Length: 499
Image (cartoon, rainbow, N blue to C red; front, side, top):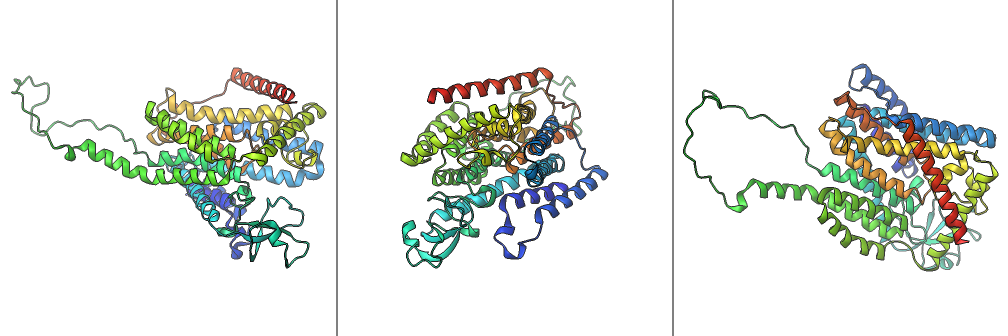
């Protein structure tokens, strides 16, 4: 019960139906779903359907979010109420997913939900790309058009066309493509709305769902059944004389079980193949360079895991077209790259200015001369929550990666569902670690859903076998923190080299 309620909570957070369904506007759907989730978790625990287990990343995640709130209280007390609510919401979603989905059914339901949300947003973005251009007006202070755009019904070809006989003379007009569910493009790049209004973030979320879709398409691994002796016949060890060898019955190739099983596997692969192709098309239409990298990385790891050498060959065929068609080029790409470099320099300046304590969660944009976030989650954590916050954030990621990797490759006797989803969650997190290097996802709710899925995987494995234990040792903590310091030093050297 709790698993499906927490899946509804995740869907509400990602899809945001209250933003495009007028009847739902003003209703606190997320808060209501969170309250119902807590109630269902309590009932499932009482009825012994759930066994709460403390995954290793839970402590680090709560410590990181608490430290982020503390630095905000120290550096920017006026922003504590707003940022504290955001951090509390992220923590609540993370804990809800980690506890409510900690069962074989919960893992499957969560995977279906995340893949379904990715498919819906992908379809919306693809439909959006083939709509005719129309005049749209943005908020007066949103000159980049990154927020919600309202169409006024006039066709256009350029932004200047929208200023001719405009209904609002001083309006902030843009010429974009309108899409379903009140969405629109931004500079011709497809996107969704709300927290996925950035094309890069939409591409990352969709790319992270690919391994889960592949896991759902895999055939369930059942336990081996022992062979039973025939009733009334002698036992195998009766010492009966050997019989004459009998000639095996050979069937035509078209009637063999092997061919039938291959045909069934091919039919099961058709939906996931369509999903992968649709996400690839959406990534190309979003013109997201980081999205292309994540897509190729996730797909490459998945292909190599399943097909070995053939997977490498398949990745070589898919990679060049994606690199050729995806991403931006020309002056727009150069301007974006220069902007990101400048933001990284400002992040290091904030670290030095605050002596490694940070400026507070969500305050980078106010301190930046460009008014933007760091576009790098690792440096964002260091600039806003200090060096301690950066280490805690890295430990959250490390522990979340270690859990599925230990269940996948370690010497543990987990159940078939845990073994099935462990590689998928690991590959999904690999894509996340690559993507957040180019995005500000240190407190992103979607990231913490996947981190919560890793914690839920641990709970599901422990529920099937209590001997499954994954810990983070003190040596690992020291290595992770030292590694993050080395990364900071190397980034600083690269930025100085770039001038």
